[in-house]
Length: 174
Image 1 (tube, rainbow, N blue to C red):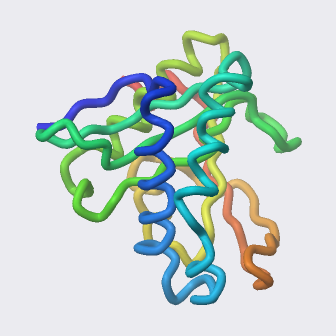
Image 2 (image 1 turned 180 degrees about the vertical axis):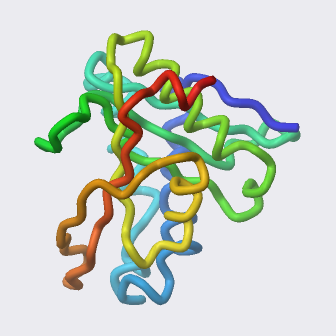
Image 3 (image 1 turned 90 degrees about the vertical axis):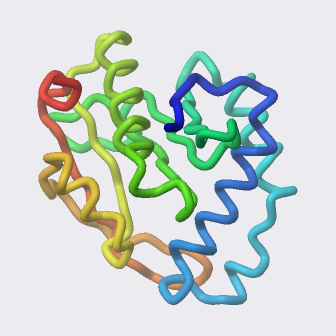
């Protein structure tokens, strides 16, 4: 069994690795291969170092470890960044390597973010996910309702992004 814990600066490289590897695993066939081929861990690690230091007061990050203690996933959240009516909290990212899926770690990351948002005074949660991402059904399975959609450009390709929302965080953490 794995565990969920709050990320530290020492996790930046592992989070960068998971971010890149999960993009390749999840978005192959959705995003152009040349774009996926240029996404590198070396580029993501400094971004996560900043998130875990400079931006730590504005957001939070949790990691999922497998039974061997290896970071196989992460989630980040904070204040809702758009202007979607009725939602004040946002799950910015949740990425889990394929080898870490089907073990309850994704649900654990979602619950950790929801609990933290509640603790910080938020009442609702929104997450944006690509319409072509098969993992979007995970959010529906957890009770998220489709509340919005918008176009987004990634790697020179225009895609559709769907927002799933939970108007009451308490229901998510039971």
